[in-house]
Picture (cartoon, rainbow, N blue to C red):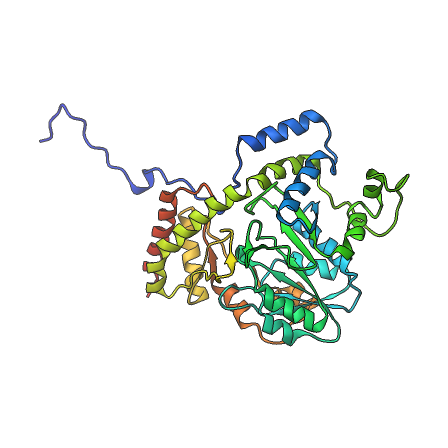
Length: 400
């Protein structure tokens, strides 16, 4: 008989055990400095955009690319729309871009009446394939928009060569590429224009925000006018004109000083944030190497010339069914993994407004098989190990 002096053991069901904490897909890297900057800006009562905090962001961006004119925007979407205005796109013009991108890349072109032409991406990086771009050029082609997927640079030399050959403007959608480089040079500075995102899911964030880098000196004056609602207000502020007035089309692209205050702290921390994310990325790569070999999973491939920023760690599975099975199992474990784009050429709007001049097999395979894992700078090693363990368990539980 059990000793009466001892409590009888209580049977516990598996459901009674506390669930492990959820692992979010992303988490902004914020601290006390960001909080102090917001408090100071609110206390200043100068909240409209274009003041000291905006200027601080511009100085930080210009320090990285001193030959560029940086202009903060409310989002990368707004930066791309501003780029389309600066290119002078007209109805019927064609702009070549990857189908493997967010719809903002195409919407910026559509709003000017131009036509998105969807080209395939490379198997290794999922970045725009220069050969596919060359094959898509027609007499109506005006520009190419490349996207640095996962913060890994496109082959800029190859894309620049195609654009020079055909007289096309090159624009960088560098939404994911803050702090990343190609051949030692910062991404966003290769094209005539470069657009960044500071959305909450990006490495450097202010919640919602972006920037346009104007790299072509011939576009600088008009860019300032478009940015300031079509007026020459910036010239007035510099004392170049006695008063400012409406000069051209434009819009209210600039964000508030509250947004800029948060962003300024983040931009000053970009190297620290990048270093933390790269450590997480590299740990994933080491943990997943054996698993990828056993199950035929494709890990990210980084070209030698690319210094990426650890924005995304993704795996590509042998089939959509296997990817979806693993995604569902991870979701049940409260692990915030995610697929990525629906290829634009397969979407309802892409079929209606754009055109793919030929098959896009690499893009379609990525859309069907790619899975992104949780990644942020403060993701603890133990939680990373749990992600990999649960991923391995999901693969082992595949129905036969």
